[in-house]
Length: 393
Length: 121
Image 1 (cartoon, rainbow over the protein chains, first blue to last red):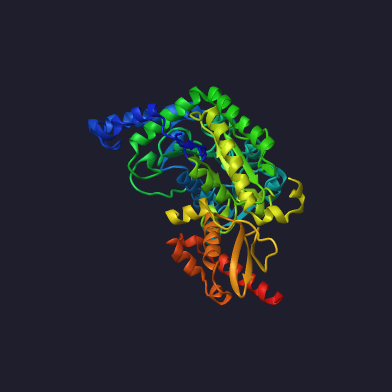
Image 2: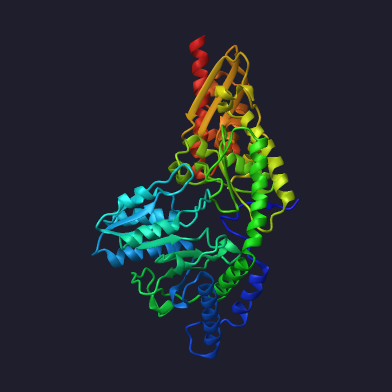
């Protein structure tokens, strides 16, 4: 059986139609989009078209789309750029506890530079506490940032309400839409957000390219200085093939968004249904309704996530884990801990994220294998026996 | 990330379980940190005639549990006390650096099980 890929939140395969569109920009139309000759102008047209396609799809103006190297750079730019530009106005910034590390690590760095952060908690389903957010606002608050949908548990945040709160207090508002972009119909102008980050490889595009939407009129500090690219706001030779691939991937994903979501949700729901009915002592992390259609995140009690991940991998099934052992830190997933899930269950968490190329047969096979693996690891676990509740399993 | 020997020890671990009427038991680690290892031993004339483990932890923790129990079977308790995490890692042909702490658990669990045995004697 061919390997089964259930880690689409980590990255997606490049859509072959996207590759076709990209290829000429490597070998034939290889010009630098900043060059004045015809090679350059051909590249520039491709970049302009890509920018317009993306802008149209998300309800922005082309002049509001700034290409970057991906989600991490976009997140960094939004956060650092705001801190840099508005530090005279205030040094307080607000983000959620469940942001991507691109935000959290950057916040820690900014703290060293004298900025102060409030980290807003979430409820048991991973949804941001709006009251806590509003209460955290100070006269010197210059930034409110919350992801659109969480990468681990898939919880979709009440972004409209967050924007409303930020507007009321006249604070720059940012959302990291890296996970949401390919799965939710997003309209930035309707939403009224000031900045939004994207990454192409999460919806069938290439790695190494993304964008930051910056509302026209919003001043922002630079973090990458160089030439005149991106209206002098972000230096560096434009990744022409990359942005062509980005726009085509977004166009294709929007074209079949409803159909794909329905299909993927069907697979995901079947998976959840079987896991919950056939494997004892599991917990679906996150919200049952308010979650990305591709995401199922489970804690398997009494066992550890990396072992599950490795066993599945040996069976040709690729997933990811919130266990500490999958990373270099000793702490399990910061998202699950913020949701109040005890560390030992967070260590036993596995994220399954489905894609449009997955099949029902793959889902059934995965559950069959998962059942065996969970059983085998529990047999090996001292906790399984120690826990009195499970004696009658 | 892991070499073949580690993967094999993880995939087909030896000595899984708990010895009935064991002579010594050692449990180390905690669930919050994501690693618990329990080793039980059967001792005759100060020789470890059987050892079994139960482990909550990552692939490296399982592999080192399996290897460590395998190494101490047939050893005198004094010899078993000389089994260090370094020897276990050596036997496995190396572990990723962030996994070294898992192998320490195996060494500690063995020592604790032997202490338990001695205290009961």
